[in-house]
Amino acid sequence: MKIEETILNNVSRVKLEGRFDANTSDAVEKFIRERIEKGRSQFVLNMENVSFISSAGLRVVIIIARELRNEHQGDLHIAVLQPSVKRVFEISGLNNILKIFDDEETATKAFSK
Amino acid sequence: MKQSYDFPADTAVLEKIGKLATDAGSNAGFNDIEIGDIQLALDEVCTNTIIHGLKNDPSRTFQVVLQWDSGEIEIQIHESGEPFDPLDLDDPKLENIMEEQSAGGLGLYFLRELMDEADFRIGRDGVKTWRIVKRKP
Image (cartoon, rainbow over all chains, first blue to last red; front, side, top):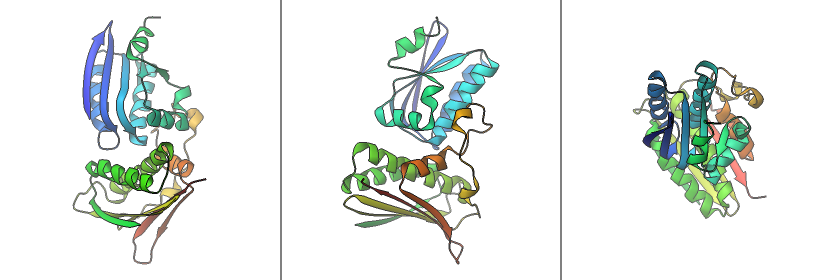
């Protein structure tokens, strides 16, 4: 799993590439937690290049989003889901709970509103 | 067609297992959505096996047996790990998923939702076997 970050207007845009499964989910969680500990509370998770997600990946998304909302007055926006990944979000119902956007810029700007 | 593979209990093997699932699903004539379902279901079972059954110990192994015909695929996963009955877990309450303590249980929920059959048994020799089946409508 490749993880890259850019920051714009205090929003941390984290771009993932590869599988988001039990083998890679810990690294993603650690990456984001390190930034939360440094004071970041607004995240965009760009999943355009995430080819597969399992419940292990969803668990990290849920836990991080919950913590940002409940403890840091922040949030986690999801940007760009491949069809197979979008299906997993829909089956789990997360598409109704998390904010999902068609592109990273819109997901970022949504924090300004 | 039948293929059998042995894997160490290491989550690094999940990517290769995923490829086996997509190849077998494609060969059996499933569409992209169905192939994705098969891949996810197998990933969830294997993850459960590696982490809960075999405690992430790469010196221990499990076996994946894929068997398919046109329009049907059956996958069995055999392991001799810790006693654990995954069917003891309740499905997560999806409407409360953001409040659930561990966000766990989703894996088995996907299994039941995406596959036509999913069962688990423990043989007399202590070998635990998952069996998952998907058929074209």
